[in-house]
Length: 365
Image (cartoon, rainbow, N blue to C red; front, side, top):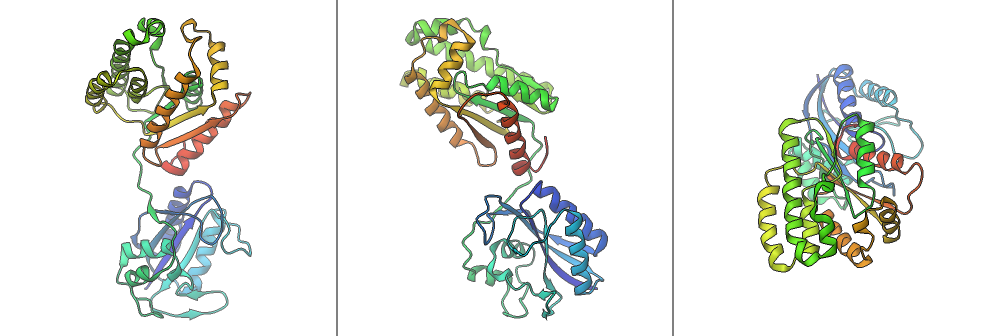
């Protein structure tokens, strides 16, 4: 039996699924998997593609000779949709490389082992160090850990952690940005629950627009309680994916605009106590558009108490959403900028969300 180290990578399609399919095929056709690294994400190496790669390294016990192993890997690539071109660094669904084969040095037209460029690439060295840091390069006589410290590759290599099951997508945005319409459409498309905010039941809302200073605190506190009760009640009885057009964080952002400093300090304490008891959105979708579009939408939906909302108020709300958006972790948020509302926009936005989920959660929705 022989020991080989293989590099797997790809940046087109469902990257995690492609790596998993490749692993299954390798185990079926080539031998026994002894070690597998985590999935590592990095920018494309050697090209300016905006499609990030997902990479992995494995240790394989195989009865195949080096040339036989290469032939099997090329066949697996082809079955998984790899189209080879003269460009060694082009985008691809899957790329399978032999990094090491025993301690052999092979230099032939069709195969070169160790891989001639592996010592230049952090996306190979980092996972190699993870699974076998003391592995010795037969040509350079240095370990993987030593090669990693010597490489001049500046591309960032980060672990793409396994995500928990996507359970809660929240679609948020400024007043009249279309969050409810998109959330309802997405829930229908995915055949899952839609949780709409019960704001129309709040009798304080029209009063707030008449006298903001007097009604701001009771309004924001009532919204906080209402949102908390809605979300906690839902998650107490449901585990399947839900799409909502609000989050509990909306209370904090609006309170920051509407409350005086001392009121906000008190409100924030109560908010933190309640927010800690309910799930945070697995994916926060932020719809952003300009004030002209917002004013048009406000007039269209015709709520009397909203018709005198000022541009300055909309600006203030937007600033809080921007700050709130930044606070969410990368991979758990997406900002969708809307220049113009038009027919077919919902489908475009839903496609963006679906692609983002595949890219960052490793699953289709």
